[in-house]
Image (cartoon, rainbow, N blue to C red; front, top):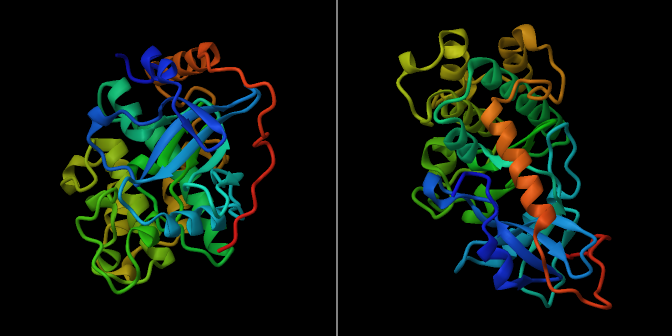
Length: 306
């Protein structure tokens, strides 16, 4: 199966979660990159709304997942992907966002056949750093940046999995080796149980950009492209005080990309990734689900109390 393909078998199972019928999984397990939640492309029973649907990992406590999903509704920033609807108090946990054709970063590397071009990585870093700058300006820590959290779309990246580190384990408890947390992008202070702080997001972004450029979150320094080797190395400092602020990262990576928010648009995505996005979009449009005469519409957010 080609990366980005929507398998027909997924639509035929007609599995349902909350008010949605699942079309296909968003993530390709063959990439073997940890994902902190189960993610699907799904459609409402009336066929009017297609969404990105997230569920907590099997066997995990759903309460932190819902808490972070609820908090994500207030996220700002050019690449933020806030939840727009979530499960009610008496439902199994889920949250959703409007669907747009998108590939998780690990899938994009698989489709492309290896690390992304330097100009794409540079533009990706600018766009994500801009978003972190806005999130930090809101007084928030994202605490979930990782390769799987980055979704590449035709008009630029989106940053998902808000609060994944907080949801995995409370402050004071070791998070090392927990399901769903990619070890190379987990800041060392958070792995040992420290409260997530903004400079931890910078560490995670550095690891994610290293992954985009090399296929590894912890490459050797000389494996990184020379143009941004130094700034990524600073991001990956074990001492948070030595890491750059997002604004510094934007300046260091900006180069000829400028600082446009949708920085991977306008030809900066590789051709095979663009083709996979088009294939996914077409397959989702063609997917069939059971028709329901009078479903409850999920168009409006479902309030959730912490």
